[in-house]
Amino acid sequence: MLKKKIRVAVIGVGGIGKSAHVPAYSSNEHTSLTALVDIDEKKAKRVAKRFNVKKTFCSVDELFDNEEVDAVSVCTPPDSHAEIALKAFEHGVHVLCEKPLATDVESGRKMAQTAKDKEKILMVGFYRRFLHNYQRAKDYVLDGRLGHIYCVEDHFLEPNPLFGWTKAPWFFKPGVGGVLLDIAPHIFDMLNFVFDAFPKSIAAYSSTYFDSPVEDTCTFLVEYPEGRMGIGVVSWLSPTFMESLSIYGTGQNLFVSPNFILNANPNDILEVSLWRAASESLVTKKFPDLSMLRTRKVNPYQREINRFIALVRSNAGFSASALDALSVLITCDKAKTAIEEKRTVQVPSPEEFVDL
Figure 1: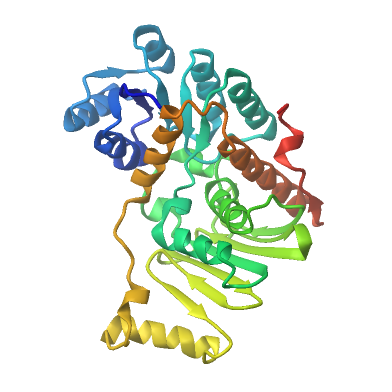
Figure 2 (figure 1 turned 90 degrees about the horizontal axis):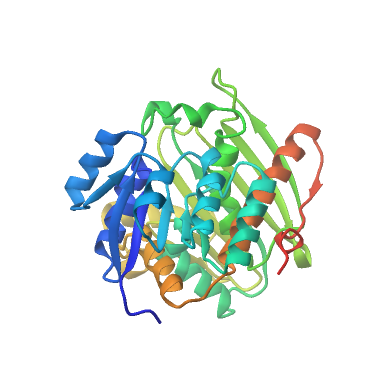
């Protein structure tokens, strides 16, 4: 385990870089946030001043030519991820990358293979894995209390980016944006996380409500080994943010969101009544055991960065996180094929793409 502080640079200080990665590294006792990189020099300097970061650069090349770092966070648009990560690996630097891994499978394969060859960490920021209730749900699965998990259903709905949280044009660029690359990676990673497996096949459907060159709604049916099924729904059409996960087992069912978690065993009332009782409890606060509805206020991005830094400090070299990320990218690619060709498509394992 390394004792020295890990020197880190954050590349891209837009929304996710500024609000999640920079504060998380600043709060990690094992890191030294050495530099920020952004093509907007004024933005980089503003964020650097706020978090007391001494150096800023306008390009990745400028960073690597002038500063020694051990790890980087890549928080730039998806079509730049591969180029930046590959340069980082060539300089012996570990990489935490925002999702998706890349915009095409070949670029993702090169990233994973290079990470393996260079014995460097490649991890993608699937922050939902680090939300307290989803970790609790995974614990329920692992301890067997739910029985055989035969179906998992995941919904992730939010407003159109233009109506709220961003005006970045790349969200509406074919092959870079749209819900298939923006939100679906979270769905596919969560299904893999719960099933602890990679998918075998996928059927997918999409639609576009607004006048846009990219899809704003997608639905997926994903087959896993042993006949298990995953269902996913993503959309930019919801008036509010909504996220929920349902895990169906032969022993119990589990209903999860970032804000609460509920078990439904054979002795419970019907599902509709169960959800109504949960809703009423949040309003009236008269539910007899509110502890089951409480969520610990722990920043999932802080947990994500802590995990990344722990991997770097352990000298772990290449980790399974790269295969997780590549699997999600492959599934996105096959979902696109399934949509275009209106058929079920086989999904190869990421292990077929990397020489392990």
